[in-house]
Length: 80
Image (cartoon, rainbow, N blue to C red; front, side, top):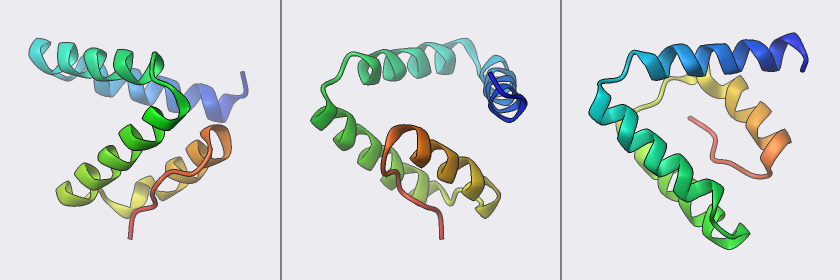
């Protein structure tokens, strides 16, 4: 694993441990649903996440993370 990818994972894990126990459960439920979804279902889930993220006003600083995710997993939405 390259250091950039490792850094992203550490950042995600650090964010996860800062969630409340209820939010951690909800996150893991959502992730589990995504992991076991078909390709078509995954596209719908990502589209829903994009809509939710846009509604919450995700900052532009995550643009590079979104580009990296797009390279790894196919098309994802991009912040404005």
